[in-house]
Image 1 (cartoon, one colour):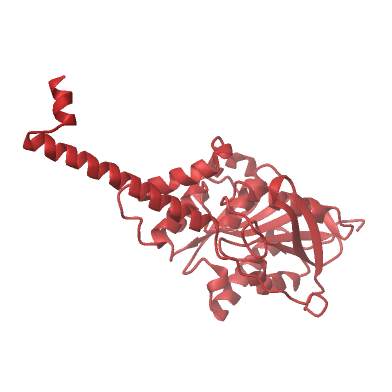
Image 2 (cartoon, rainbow, N blue to C red; image 1 turned 90 degrees about the horizontal axis):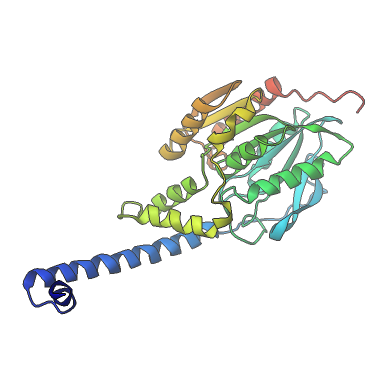
Length: 313
């Protein structure tokens, strides 16, 4: 009892010091949790950028395609760029803090080779409100988009290729692991679990070096996505991609995503290939770099998913 009394009403110097240290640690922990929570809030609600285009005058004869996503996400709109009638469709999945508008040159490069191409915006991106889950919920959006395109009479409903960058790459592989319609994948800067992107974004703020800051941010993100706490990482189900051609693009300018891309490539079943790139973010590349990037992506799809119309189409 005397020990408890001394801790409650310290009279000796060492108990006063201990009590002060406990108070400092306690309030430092609270401050860390508060800052981490604020960071996560800012991260899952990225600044949205969107601009309208006149589809009737835009090259490539694009069409607006409406589709519905189950749950609170609701209505979505994407742009379909037609290729050969009955040919496969390539779906482009933009990255975090990007939008479909920033992928139009890659769309053109694929459409020039007679692919059908489809682009849309994920939740919390473009004109869509909400918060990102870095792939947990966005996978439903990709599936809904594929379902909508598969209803068209001018495509092969059982043949899709998917390209994605970070968020989009995670979504592409996660959907492909359970959807046999995906016949080829290009995965740029992919990660194994959504909370890895939280770590990447916290590091960009300069606060990642503070004790427990990253872990506190990951805990906050896990709490926001509690219903997905049992979702396995991508690497747990990669054997289902046996026989699906995969091109991994490993960036040199982002060590964490570069390392995760390499690890997933090593674990992935055949057929697979990997290419090291100086920069991984397509939308931020120079015109010359974009041209080389587009050539690499188009060449992969031409080799692995030729734009040949399905018989009878």
